[in-house]
Amino acid sequence: MKAPIGVLMINFGEPARMDRETVIPFLERIFLQNAGLERHPDGAARARELAERRAPSLIEEYRAIGGSPLNDQAEEHARALESALLSHGREAVVAQAFQFTRPFITDALAELQGAGVERFVALPVYPLCGHSTTVAALNAVRDAVAEADWDATSWVGLSGWHHHPDYVEVRARGIRRFCLEEGLDPSEPDTILYFSAHGTPIKYLEEGSRYDRYVEEHCARIARAVGVERWAVGFQNHTNRRIAWTSPDNEDRIEGLVERRLVVEAVSFMHEQSETLYELDRDVREFVEGLGKEFHRVPVPHADPAFIDFLRMLVEAALDRPGASGSILAPCRCCPARGTFCTNGARDLPPSPYGPEAEPVGAGRSTSGASA
Image (cartoon, rainbow, N blue to C red; front, side, top):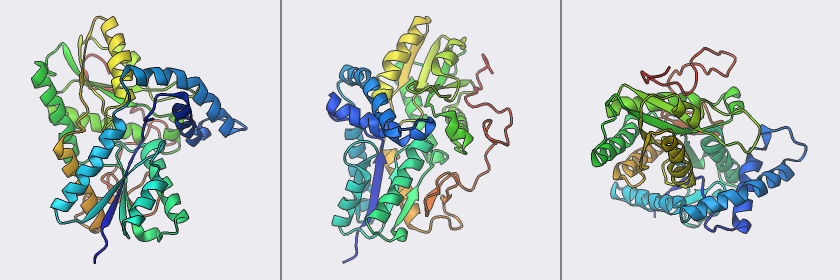
């Protein structure tokens, strides 16, 4: 009997319970993974300190939104992808893993092994390839495979896929549908399509991450697909550490816009979660409305069947000779894990404004006629 193929779907994860005993360890794992952002003699102690400081406000955020739906939506993706692969003649086992809460990557690998999987695709479900998300997740898979004594060639990693036109259309269709339902026209002079992208520490960009350029080009492609010429982008940055993050912050960018109506696209996310339901829908909305402007947030298109079909296509491309002539995948330049492919690897990108080859291209700029 032929062994089934495996898919390891990786997401950030959020706590299932809204208490200190669950939330503090979750935050601790996040801060510890990124301990290199600070010069601190004891990274573990510093992670604990940051986690205990952040936990009370995060718990309140979870309670305010009735708990995060991220984990349930991720599980729905896993089951839908499994069904889609089966309907296309691929017997597959899709295991769900989270970076910072259970089931962890090691748990999901054990599930695949128990199901008789001999070869699998590691698929982080992050639209834009970032250092602490996609790259960190695939590096964790590499380490877990080695610890589990699997053959290093038993898996293929998928990293950046925002560039593919099918995915761009998923986002654009969601925006068009929302505008139609809400009676909005993003091409009107008083309305602007506003992209809110999750920020990243500048240190990661200086070390070679292309995240800032991915955000810029992805937003431009979506705007073209929607059919608008004016758009703007800002970043959702976190201030837990005193370090530099991508600019401009959402508040700074929004304050400089002359348009009074914002159609907001949470471009970095493929699930609804605390950063969409609280940070955007409550904090940013309150800021926007305090300026006398209108806030209209496009739902994340997590339930769009076309997204699952797109993931199926990516998985099949990863199984069928990735990197070969005619494949949509090329070797990834952002992630050092062996056997990792993406839809970005064969392209030339503009240089980063943060690297040694700096040019004044500026992350987070806009094609809005109102501001440069």
